[in-house]
Length: 161
Image 1 (cartoon, one colour):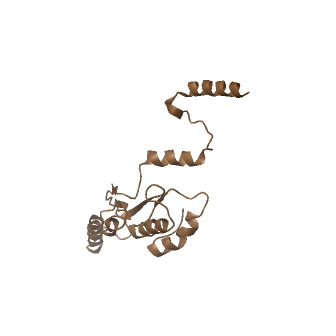
Image 2 (tube, one colour; image 1 turned 90 degrees about the vertical axis):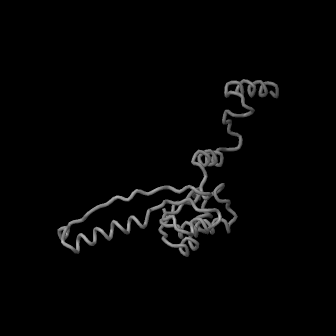
Image 3 (cartoon, helix red, strand yellow; image 1 turned 60 degrees about the vertical axis):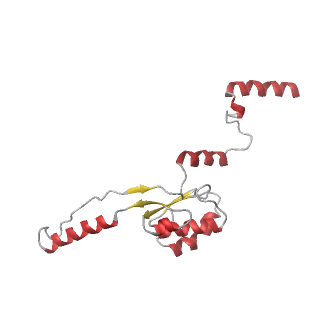
């Protein structure tokens, strides 16, 4: 986890993060501006979005659709949050809520999937492919079941011995 809450800080720290041997393949940012800083920093370093790195923001502001690729983000329904906050404030001011008491409201969010993220199954498959040695038998060569591959491999080994 990296502490960063604006585009400039994201652009400042991303080169070091992207150079790590254990570089993340996805980023979830505290807001869309930070996510856009991550997205453009990764693109400048030659990473493909979303093929190499997925990026998700949080706000669903106008910039989310203006960047390239369009940003996957969480719509926090800012207007509804503002309405609820104003209503609670007015109830405090008018004395309908006791001093020192808190009131909690839940405003549901919504994931807005755009072009900056890839499906999780693809992400996991690619991650495994990157970590497995090249000679690893995954059991999917030429569509043969693992048992048949093992037998044919044994036969080849006997022929070369």
